[in-house]
Image 1 (cartoon, rainbow, N blue to C red):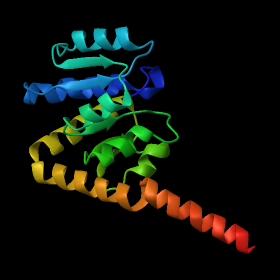
Image 2: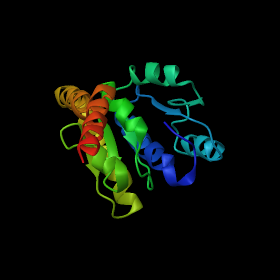
Image 3: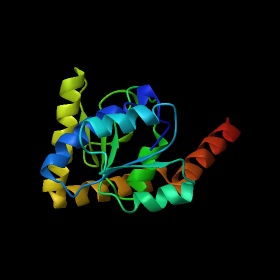
Image 4: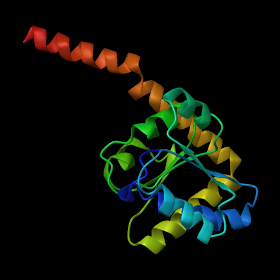
Length: 178
């Protein structure tokens, strides 16, 4: 989910999915968003023989994105340069485990018990590790469900609007005392 631009590395996800899809031919890979890379990504899926299993949703309303999240098994977020990754918070709130690159903000948002962090050494390694993460979650439903639950708990305990309101209130109270 996001803008289809180069540094978001949607191509890594498609390449990993193409390998995964060979073992799980009924699987689908959904991409939500629009941007200048869309045609190149469609061509990549076609060249890898998985064009019929990769669905490009285009830009969708937040409500529709949340609906889609409720119907997936996991979130792949292969971005090379994100400081935050709000889509990961939404994914975890929807009890979906996240697969992220172990760099920048997303690797700090996703704890080890609610997702899989992929080390970043080179492109081939990233794609192979993304594929292995997909296979691990597909072959271990209990782990996938438990990671999703852990992400949901993390969201409730640290990222909910109520929790953020409490934290802001505490900051205001401390400022007023000083």
